[in-house]
Length: 203
Image 1 (cartoon, helix red, strand yellow):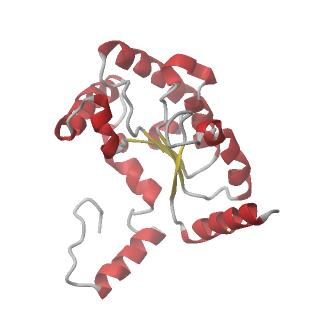
Image 2: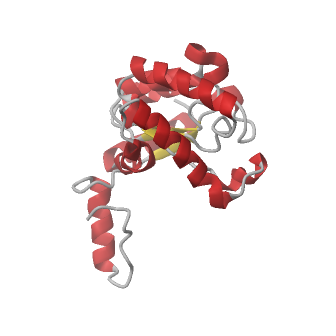
């Protein structure tokens, strides 16, 4: 094991032992030179050794419409079905904006959710807010546009849209009552009484 591998192994062990969540770039494009090095297949080796790692693979589904069952999204779906704490978010997806690509995306999402039945509880809304301007969208309407389309699709498929917009993120971050991160947060606020507890986090 070389120096980099040792450092990463130490990081994954630390995060697993303390329930610290990791978010990793996971799309063939963007984020500098990541490219194919961001392929979710490489996380399989990590997860085999640390199956309890809390992992969010960002930008889930960007290649879903074009590559379908051969997409990275399907690889992530398989990881979700195999490991208890693998999640994915939709950061900076463009597919939702146009009717044609949105329809195609949701058709493929239904297939993926059927094949990987744990995926609906691991799929999260993501903004990647600083990139919204690249899509010609104002940030003020970003959530509203997502909400309108996802509300309809989740209702049509008898799924709870609150999972997508809220509950799954709490699960990923370990912020439900009784979780290790929730307990640490309570201790932090108890030690800093002037700070205000976030209303989004259950007490």
